Amino acid sequence: MKQWKPPSRRERALYVLMLLQMVLGVIYGIVFGPHLGLEILLHVGWIVLAVGLVFFFLGPYELHKKGKAPKGARCVFTLALVDSGAYAIVRHPQTLGFILLMSASVLISQHWLSAILNVSIIVYACVISRKEEQSNVEKFGDDYRRYMQKVPRMNLLLGVTRLLLRRKRERKADE
Image 1 (tube, helix red, strand yellow):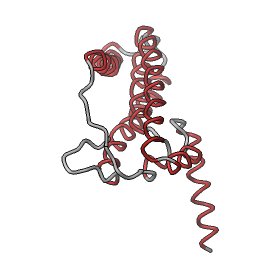
Image 2 (cartoon, helix red, strand yellow):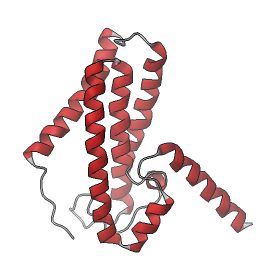
Image 3 (cartoon, one colour):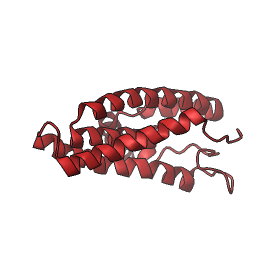
Image 4 (tube, helix red, strand yellow):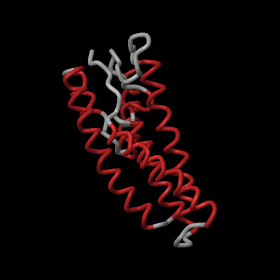
């Protein structure tokens, strides 16, 4: 098992920037109203925020619950591959949740600065998720490769569609 190391100064600064972008974008939208005044985007933003919160918190919860991490270890140090719950829909539910939360702040605030920050942070999140996958392939081997073929990285619509099709096939096989 890899030894956990604390995030670097650069990573901590990025996390703070992401948190500020999310919180300030939502606060801006609440206090000043959407910058562009597009009410439909504001409402979509609140829906995206709710979905993002679910995925953001469900990912670590399921890792902790089903990942068999050693006692006292962080949930990312799982010993078992988790492929149920949110992980049956996307391989990186917490990252997807984070991206959705940041996107919600853009939709709610409708401010150009929020959008610029959001794009750059999403690119970084995608790079990090690819690195995590390399680590997971090393850790879980062929099981993770099969999981990668079955479940998309962060495509929510494709993930839900595939999950529903898998369940439908399983029901037919049980009959």
